[in-house]
Amino acid sequence: MISEGEPVPSFELQDADGKLVSSSDLAGQKYVIYFYPRDFTPGCTTEADEFAKNYERFREAGIEVIGISPDDTRSHRKFCDKMGIRFPLLSDTEKQVSQKFGVWAKKKFMGREYMGVVRSTFLVDESGKIFKIFAKVKPAGHSEQVLGMFAN
Image: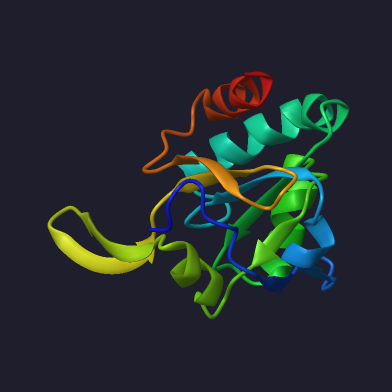
């Protein structure tokens, strides 16, 4: 995984509407990138719902929220529509961005090992540097935790 203090890795991915969003589009602003395993799963739904409910508070503080998962744009569109998500969900179907951030890793579930996204969040300042990383995130309450970090 990349470290705090490093510049955010460059990326360019499609959002739920097929529009390209790149790290250079976010230059000069504060933002949150949260990586999650899959649309419509319980933990991912909880996390997305909390970010969606707090999205106005993030925007009022001048902070953009970006969600990234390996799901395709069609899945993201359905997820956004169902959950009322107004921030970009980006499709990393090739897992290249997940690998750059170091969140594509070996996981274990019920004794089975497989490769997947380790739920993680990166807070980026106006200079494009990562100032806080949350690894192996617990979804419930995480959005509030992130908001609190920007207040400090």
